[in-house]
Length: 403
View 1 (cartoon, helix red, strand yellow):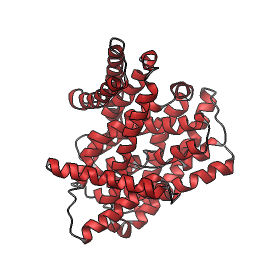
View 2 (view 1 turned 90 degrees about the vertical axis):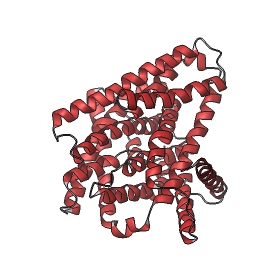
View 3 (view 1 turned 45 degrees about the vertical axis):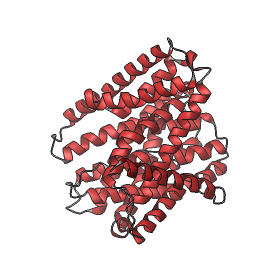
View 4 (view 1 turned 60 degrees about the vertical axis):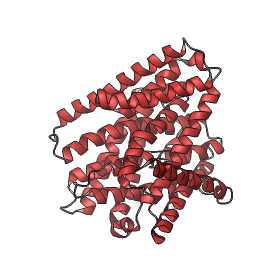
């Protein structure tokens, strides 16, 4: 793909984003859903008139993993309320670890026995389970803020999603290596690999976040300077973690952002608002790319051929989410004595949308897996369902519960 094609695609995606902003003024649906719809309409238009946009699933995979996800993860971590995150950290971590594992297993069992086909083994069901357990609250959080929902509810949803995404990506890589025959299905080795990749990412990210904070203390703190440093921190940490240390780049980026924000708190006071606004804009642009591209690569054949598997996944994901959320809330209540507002779990369950990470993971599936198309169809189907149904009705649930 030459530079002219890259520039053309970028301008096309941004033009769709601008159109969505205009249309959103008149149609009250989540902005991300509108982006998917416009992307799909654009796809039909280009196919009808024989226009080659240059967008391929393989290109989208690289764009998601190496360009968009570091921005989305860094922005989400940098924007979190650190004090509230620390307060609710036990709930967030339980949901993102035990909750994710429970969700993965429940979905896998429902899909395995529901599909009941020799071409869809249990390892395929596990891959699907982890893929659709990764949450992305971008469509809901904006609505919650508009409704002036409590900050602690926002932190619970955003914090869980952030840690959940990092855990899901690491777990996915382990299950995928087993599915490809690159490692043995041994629980002990899987736990060791997970610990190495996850905690290695924490160490690498923390070190680079702290180094960046030290750098900020010896230079003039201005918004342009901080933008350059944080951009390098996001992409540099991701690249070094993935390619030099072979640990999780996403985990590293997340902890780099969290530690940088905490360690350089005093130096960032005067520039925090400007820096936050720029990163919020970068995250907004990244989400435009993610959801328009989803609309471009999705196929109607996925839904006509895999409709039963998608319905099973939707039901399974909802059941799994209910179990995971209420189990995590109960466990934290009895172990660390941290109760949460009883009105919050229904919002956390229904507001657990799927988005960027689910899309990235299903697109990263190698085509030599005989069931890759089934998993990709299920992934796209559940992303669209959560955007169309859950994202549009969450505000009604918030009002009903009077939060």
